[in-house]
Length: 205
Figure 1: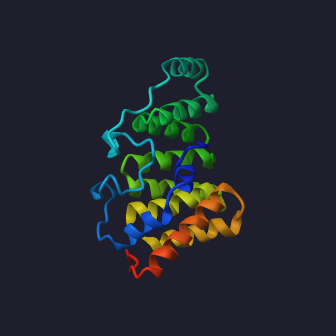
Figure 2: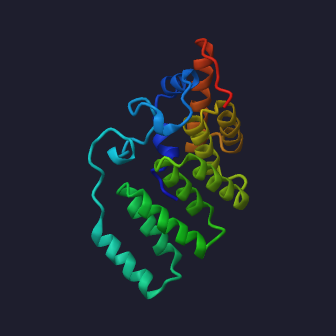
């Protein structure tokens, strides 16, 4: 499981400000939202709608090492996942998606790889596909807190569905209140509450 996926990026964000904007906006599609206001990850690239800075450099040596491992043993799911992670770190979302899909083919019950695939899909502006992938993760592990947190984030920021997002975040707080995911979910819920207290109307999307 990536330690820098949405769960950890969003944990440090100003949820009150971001969710206040989400509550008030009428824009539905993430791709149409202003780049400066969307909850894009801090390392989002210009090509994916981010701030315009250069993406991190791909670790080519690591890629070659892992590809050799996979060539020697095509069923080495750990090496396949590490390839996905390496491309993820370089913000090469399409490549990350390819390798995470391959990992799931090898290990269909791997909820972590499935959720990392969903995160990569979201970063590629494919919110509906990300949500579908998170549902797959939850079929494998219904209490997978990283999946629930990320599902809420995509519902809120990708689909403008704050009620749906809040329901997912409440599950996270109930399941693991003191975990990083639980703290992030609590902060998100506090952001929604603060936005509503300021008179904003929640989206019914």
